Length: 234
Image 1: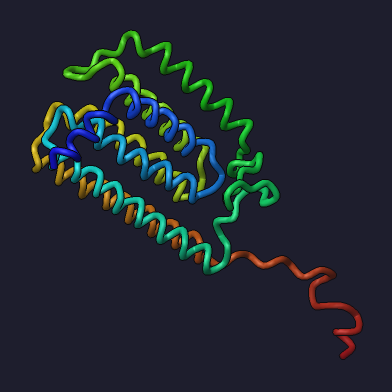
Image 2: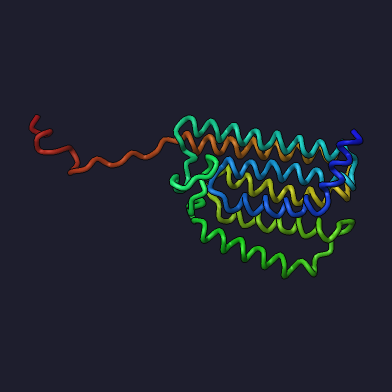
């Protein structure tokens, strides 16, 4: 346990803050659900390690485990939908890196629009961060939480897929957890928050399944109603 505590202490500083900034922007910009969920998983690990200096180690571990479970629910759902009919194929499949799609498209609105939205959100965070005063929270943690909220809200606005919306919403919840867990570090509150996150993951998994299994409208048959002249004669 002491070795685990030392690892958390080392990562909880600047590495955790930088990691949270990177994972949030990856979740917003990427067009590949595997990369998005991987970034979300890393984000939960970093949130737990960032809290390890201010809460009991057990609470930090619980938050990491809950994040792993939530991401696992979304991953299994996405994997199942892809196996059924490739309903999660988004964007160009020509450009790939390590088996992941890195095409210019990133959902229906495209990567250029998402880059612009992320830039505007980052400028808003930089503009409003000076007036932000969070109790019992360091400047680095407050900035990371503000960044997560901004990227998550942007993702909610520009996303249409339930899985992308789920990742954005869980990013916002992670930001609130990063701050509120320091104010109320009890196991009871951590348990309630964990149930909320898992229920949210299950709800969005259900929505993704409903959307993925919904019957698609078939193309209308060409030609006048009733078929061709030959078919009518037959």
